[in-house]
Length: 110
Ligand SMILES: [Zn+2]
Image 1 (spheres, rainbow, N blue to C red):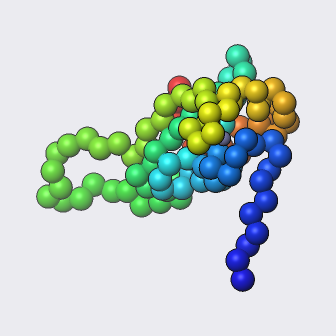
Image 2 (cartoon, rainbow, N blue to C red):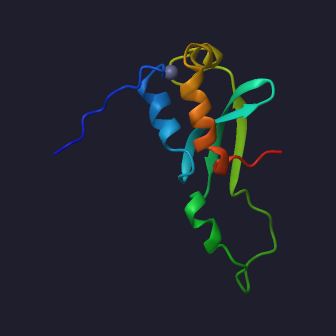
């Protein structure tokens, strides 16, 4: 039996909600990060899931090169529907504060 999708009323669209729920997994996700200046939204690409990070180890004979395990870039608008994301944070501050706590372990910035 298939689960029924229920859109969180604090979010703008299903695409945004799915990417928020993907934080820390391999692939593309949206992270919520709290700073002294307020809530930031980041689009993050991960080559491996957070939970698999501890499995990384040097491999004998591997080429000497750098790779990105994760990369993120700031977002001002929802990539799926175009909604200004600060409007969401202002309308539901508690929801996004809670998400920033939940996403702390995924944040790789300063
Ligand atoms: Zn959206």
